[in-house]
Image (cartoon, rainbow, N blue to C red; front, side):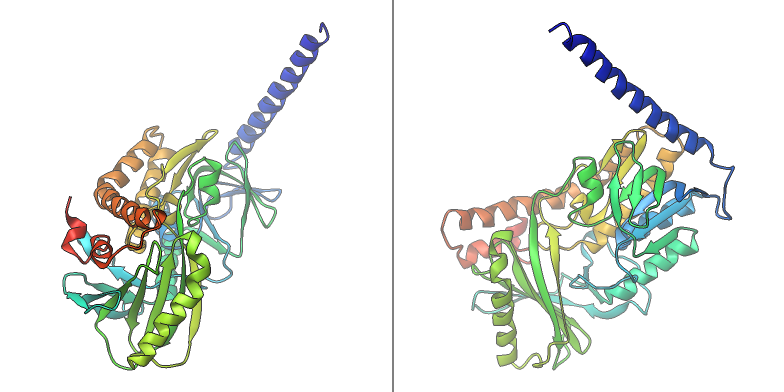
Length: 401
């Protein structure tokens, strides 16, 4: 027993010493900024790099965050695991224009204006609304446009790089072997965010989606939505894009195995109605966060961390729409990063408050409706058409208290 206390003390001393050494090494590396600077004012040495802001993910959220941070004269390194900007596309490519959240797009990005939404509940008559407008975009071109804007402002955007790990002090190890020492990390790395996991703020609920692109035989000016008790925790869609259409289905994880047959059933229906051609021009799929906003800030040692877009759980829990919220949160995250680097200790909480002010009302309503529809299925009861309508945005029942 007498040996236990000296041994414990020795182990504690070893841990404290190691921690002090690591902290001293990081401080020494940060103090070298300005002694080995490149033309962009970023320190490099021995396959290491010190930057103001490290952005993980270059979708809309990451690109907008990178641009805003670079506009504030911060050094920005942004990485993405994809080899090429905007590819592959994992998106239905519809941008709704609800609540004034219109996003600015160039002519090369826009494919078609959307004038109405038509909803099909089971096999009933369609219901059309002309107050659910928006635009169909080319998501690949959209991403490339945003990345070009970020680069123009001075952000270093690199592709084919993966975040291997983040140390407790915020040091990031990339797949190239480079260690990055940032002052701020922005996680814009999607529903299963590695950055969010590192700070303990991960998405709790995801839906699985599958989509195919097909020829559209006649011009169509609206989005079509398909609600059915067979599509558990989600819906089907047909979104027109000129002479093509994206048709897809999203479901709760437990129903993932039904995705392929559900999509094929919808495709056959549209073929019978002679609305689409037989060719399949492309496939895509992915996951969408539907559990609501996670806490979008944290710290790793002295490094401030912000989450944006899907990493922050900002997709709408009912519709899955996430592009407007990605753009908005990305810009706010970039501004928060600038405030943090400038010494504002409340930048993280202020960022979360801004997100809450913008998204809480719509997010909380969508979460309530989502819980309703999932409750029907978990009780081994098939939801009836009136219940399906209550959980979809095109119906007045959805907006009732």
